[in-house]
Length: 157
Image 1 (cartoon, rainbow, N blue to C red):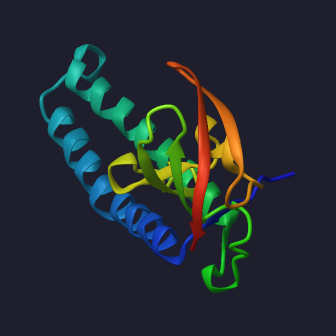
Image 2 (image 1 turned 180 degrees about the vertical axis):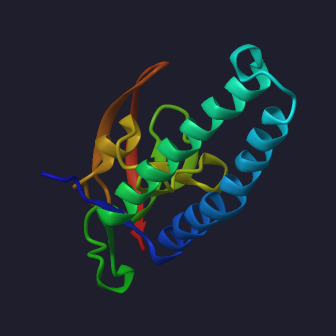
């Protein structure tokens, strides 16, 4: 059975744009590389041709995987999210109990994760430790540097 992946409308649109780009420009660039390598003579000893064919295979694999993700994608209506507890797409403001540092993260699918913009994967250790918790809850989360206790300050969407 297929595993559904939940996206924001914005995240889903980005994936669709990436797929269109790979199918059009990506395939055209690979075809051009193959044609140029083919023009250089004997294909049995042509490293450029072999590299271009391998790149073509990798591109087609990426396209196939992206099509599979899009086929199993579901959009979450952010206006209907429950903000009483942490869920997928929630924006969570947390405080490190030990040093008082505060941070805010949005829990998104793996494909949408971007730490620089404050979006972490729903499958990350921090997100897993926050799921289902409410404002005021404290939770100990195991991260690569050890165990950190966080307090949930605010949940929004």
